[in-house]
Length: 289
Image (cartoon, rainbow, N blue to C red):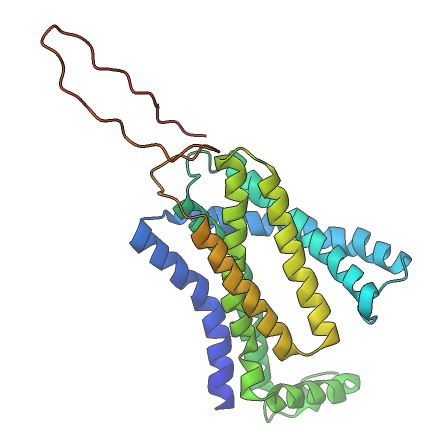
């Protein structure tokens, strides 16, 4: 049972984003290139985000006398700082993807596939780490640790192996449960950023940054204040709200949206008069951003 659950944990994390992408490709004919651009946008965001946290944010938090070991308003401030850092880097990078690589793919379906790639590679990366940990633990199970690790690390390795197998099954599967809800959150963020281009109101980008900041800040605060189960329940609530955001902003992928106007429709074609009069020009012209 223990082995099956741990295999299921990393398998779900690896399969979930790919399953979503396959569904979008078959159901909505979304291109896999959108998924790839989403993957690239996440990787690029982390290339800048991780060094920023390491060399700028962590010294700043320490200089302010804050830490994750605190509670109350101080912990909330730490959560907001780290959440804002993630929101800024990921959502700005996501917006740059729309700006430079998705000029002709700014519709709801494209936003779904783009978000699936952005959040999907995060889930896959976590799944790979869980897989590697599982393989290592299995390789060391029942082995003579003194012949595998340095003598000074034997006790540490033994305690880590014991803790791994002592974890109950319902806790061992929480990684997959978290990715199950984190993925719709990431997709909703892509849909929110998309609105900045479709509606030409760039406060939508600020809204995406704020939503990302709130989710991360609350997760950090909950994890340090309560327990992992309540934290995952809160993440699930955020996931459900994100699904609501996705559905609320759904549009016909063939239409262009203009703030304050209904979606554009194909004009009615009327018969041409025998006089050779030209067809009446449409009031609308299809256009791409």
